[in-house]
Length: 450
Image 1 (tube, rainbow, N blue to C red):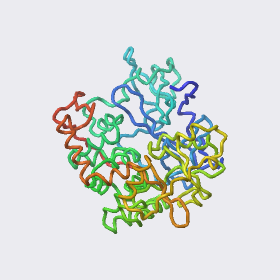
Image 2: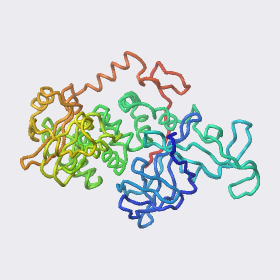
Image 3: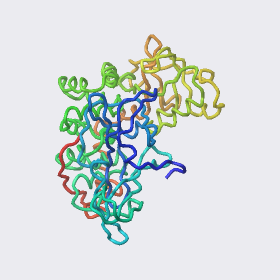
Image 4: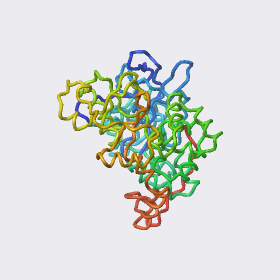
């Protein structure tokens, strides 16, 4: 755990107010959502159930929580107001884990869970349940007899998933540490029924990452088997350019219905991308590069570059523009590359070190010209600017590669991996806990979740 990171007992979070960055209250915490893991590994805390205006309960991912204290929770201010629905692999911490009878590993004594503690992992935004506060004897949390003690999560049994027979729960827990591309390989080799069940059990962000790595046919199949509101949530979590590519393959009525269900801001980005030809700079670009005002400092830029959810290509440079900072921005002034940020003092204004030597790309620039531009100047990304001088987005080298490779390159890669070794990718155990040379997996039997 990170040195000095506070440990918080979840009972202290029940009912506490949730604030946005401006200090305005947006709701109250009603529960916490965790995902149990195989063996005795501490559960991962996925997010909070927050009650907002109208007594609606929504899901707030921990990635959108910037501060957790016993008296309040601070968020990024971005909330998805769709009603919370629990998924098969999720557990409500207050509603399902507390007042539960479990056993101590040390002496097999039965104890009652009075509380659990959460703590943030070092150098990451992930949270885990790492401590359990229990009472020996007694039949419930309100009984006043028996010794109380706080133990590590691994010191109790009766919570975690078993190694066998857990269907999709076991699969999802096993897949947790896999890279999205490797998990995409797993899903590609499952039967359609199993693929749909596992996809339904993954959280939105994880499923979005995996969809981006799957062949087009698999993407369309999985999206079509999700409830429409869930499909819209997953599309929101995808990079806008990947979401646009996927939606462009759907029938017009289905595409429009999903766009209508998406948040207006996310849908607007995707609609703008869909308006460009696919094999042009406008069709290739992402609408979410790092944009800074001229009066931002090198320190501000480096703080933005450090964001964990950024791809290396997007983190390699920042784009300096006049307000507004959301694409399409005000007048584009230039680019500042990451290496330049490392060479200048933190207080330096980015407007003083912008690179204006290379002109930006127009949105109708064809793919061969985009490719030549990146190759000629050794770039990993390039700005896309319209006729009025506004930054529309950025084309990254990974987007270009996706369109230069054959349409079936992911399918070919997956088959090559299957010939070279187990089709489930590196390190994936079978139901018995050993690598499965046949590439089979237990059949998950789960209902669809949120």
